[in-house]
Amino acid sequence: MLGKGPGFKNSRQAIFGGGGAAWATGNALLFDGVNDYYETTNTTPVSGVGAASIFSVNTYLPSTHVQNLVNFRLPVSQVGLSLYKVGAVVYHTAPTSSSHATVGRSLQAGFNLTSYNWNGATPSLAVRINSGTSATNATANGSLSGASAITFGKLSFTNSRFLNGSLAEFIMISQSVNSTQQIIIENYLAAK
Image 1: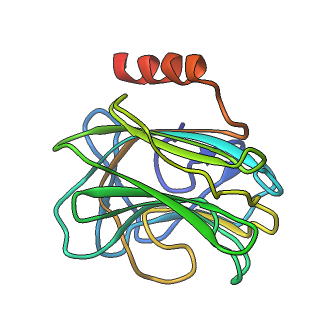
Image 2: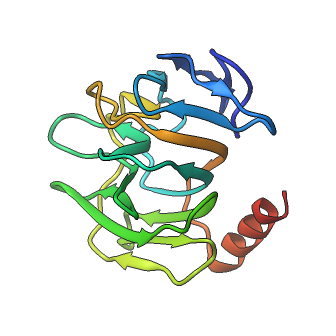
């Protein structure tokens, strides 16, 4: 979960601000779609991870460009975990042994609760929006070996794909959760 203000903490690691995203009433982090982002280059907590579950509560405002919510940067030859929006669809990407696998789901207006579950050993990648049916991909057999940055609000290796929206909650677990655990976490977030 995110703390307040520039230099906030997540997983005991400092995250450094770019354009200085602001806090909205109710403590959601706002991104302006122009230059707001947060990034950390200390990736020790996720380095080498081969499975992850990510839960986010956020909005995407209308935009003509791709918007990245979070990106885990890997060496150039591999795409890491990435959550981004194109049009009215949110996509989730996970590494494979040679490239990346992607799944997408349609968004609703306003805040969306997104559940992302990836297991490189199985391999499996699934995404749910607002506790709906999962979209899946069975080719995500990679890991986060060599992760060099975690970036919220833009694509990690360029100054592009800035997020125009807000982030109220973000939880990452460095393992794939089962369906019962997923429902418990979704219910916890929905009740907040």
